[in-house]
Length: 290
Image 1 (tube, one colour):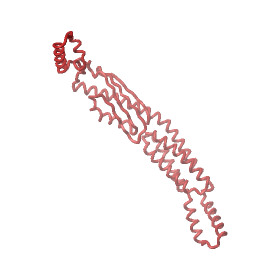
Image 2 (cartoon, rainbow, N blue to C red):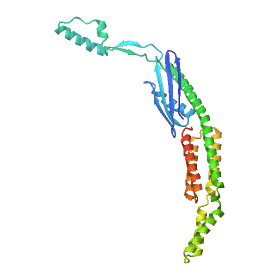
Image 3 (cartoon, rainbow, N blue to C red):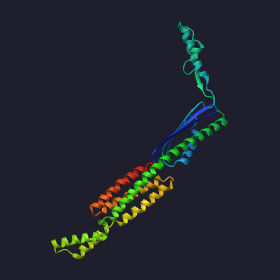
Image 4 (cartoon, rainbow, N blue to C red):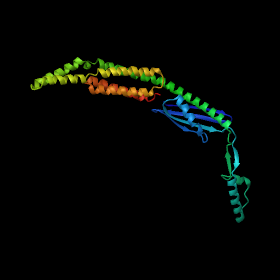
């Protein structure tokens, strides 16, 4: 969701430039910097951003010069009268040369450079031109994100393939076979019985059956397979899917955690840890997806 775009133009003597910067964000957060007097554009700008983008922290700024007419110097009458009174008082009490009009006008506050006010028709025409320019900048940002998204898609699909391969590795591991699990517990029961003849055999077999059931990870592996299919479908749709993929990353991680906790063999634990590494990499990349 990172990116930068810029659009500029000229309208009836006014030159303007839009700049948009974007970084990752869970939702769409738009921060605006508009010139004084153009705050009324805020609603339209936010609406335009929402129409083009669905996620990201956006910094949208507008710089504007000219505003359609040449600025003209204007005399601040109130400030001028105050200065003239002060000059007259000083010249009447001190031996100083008389001040020229140019010197007085050069004093700060006496002369102001004001931009003439535009009428309603001029304001509406400029607003329309500015919003057209904003649309160009947003389209450029969208194109930048689309190009970046195509590159990310290949990375994410590769990571999903790794998750599928590791899931298959766990599925074909001999330690996951239910009969192997039962045989292991049967051997452990036999060992305990040989050491102590006072153990309740029925109770031991019952506990072994419960433990064997808990050690069965086929359900977790099936869900991992289902999640990889769903994640791949989301990516191939090509629509804004960032939030959905974040949810899928959480589901991947949940199943990997359960697999590690139920693992009854070192090989399964190692596979589960590899899964968690790939899933964490997947989650980090998903943060860049709109």
